[in-house]
Length: 149
Image (cartoon, rainbow, N blue to C red; front, side):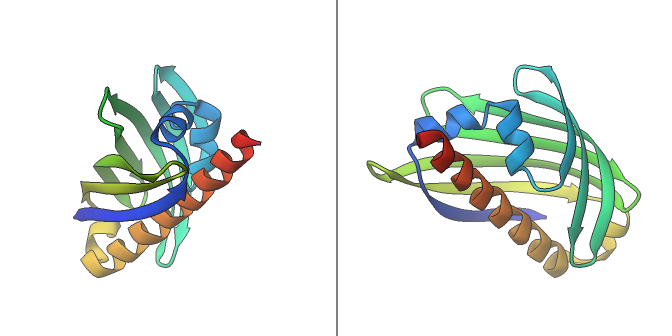
């Protein structure tokens, strides 16, 4: 399943990338995370609960945030397993400054889903991904504003 979109935030690429490397921020802004255990730099074991439309389940797995030096880009890698199925995703997020205080986060990637999740179909799963993406960016924007004060 293809994942892509963009979101405009009040931030600089540097501030965004700094926060996405902070475990407490990652836990706050990633939808559904209930438990987060750091296993290495920018690598975590996570337990999440997702409730969006027909997707209602508990998942366990890993999350990693990999920065591409000098490119204002990070790659999110997710590997989650749950009773509804499994999700393996890699999402490239490029941060483009559009002013001194504003960026566009362009994200693009692919997710492989199995089990009941796969049987829901592309259209339903795309809606779930869109909802979760908006939550992520809205919560990240709140964190960015809180850290600037």
